[in-house]
Amino acid sequence: MTASNGLAPCIQTHDVLGEVPTWCGRRRLLFWSDVRQCRLLALDPETGAVKSWMMPDWIGSFALTDDDRLLLASRKSLLLFDPSNQRFETLAVFESDKPDNRANDGRADRNGRFWFGTLNNADRIPTGHLYRYADGGVAHQQSDIIVPNALSWSPDGRTMYFADSWVGDIWAYDYDPDTGDTGNRRVLLAKDALPGIPDGATVDAEGCLWNARYGAGLVARITPDGRVDTTFEIATKNLTACTLGGSDLRDLYVTSARQRMSAEELKADPNAGAVFHARVATPGLPEPLAQLPPDYRGVPSAV
Image (tube, rainbow, N blue to C red; front, side, top):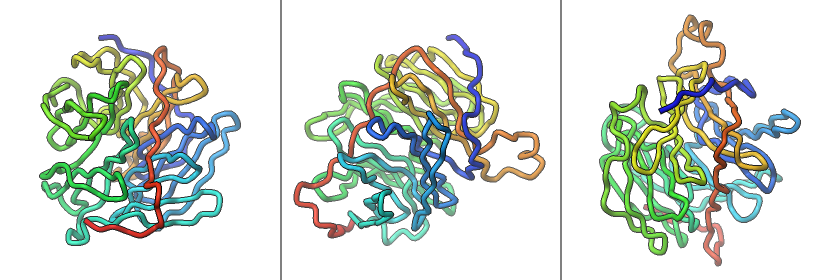
């Protein structure tokens, strides 16, 4: 294992809970969410300009689509958002019977199915679930989750990665890209292999998993056989998620949080809530696009 030089802040937006950085190659923008301030943000790296949109609720995760809209996992619904006119449409609703639950981490697989998890926002108890949105409906995939994170897929789409941050292990699953079915869950990285807890992740062109370690101030690159290849130290402790973007997909972006930090802690950690950046050797992969039903009419479906 090698340790790299630290990443530098590229923009300080004082996010309370910055999450799910996502590179849009078509627009050459980095999108991310500040969950607790109900904001969706976009950075133009060439100019340094940041645009922000207010959301109707917390946005735990989102995905790009094949047009200029974004699929958002809001607290209790999947929404389509058009940044050009700031219009929202409801795709689906879920967990109406679980008032304390909300959507958290999510991503589209290589075939465009949008996966997302839910957590109990009032207490750390296993009432969360993992879902898959495809063909106009939300299908339940897994139960008894506390904090879902690290959803990502291998370059060939045949391995899915997922972590329950409260448990601490990062798991790998066999994945059928044709059906979206999972099986043969095993531990990719055990909870005590690195400091911090596993948060958001992405996969590069060599099939290595990049994982943000909340509470530890580092991002780790993990090989498909579970070895920690490289760690990147970052000058704030609560890192939430990472992605690879830029014109050659070699720009590493990492979001962070300042939630639950005292005034004294924030003074000592002025980078909390910033987005960090570094150039890396191995490129990432184009972000998968969430597919909408061909006959989509904006009619919600319920779980």
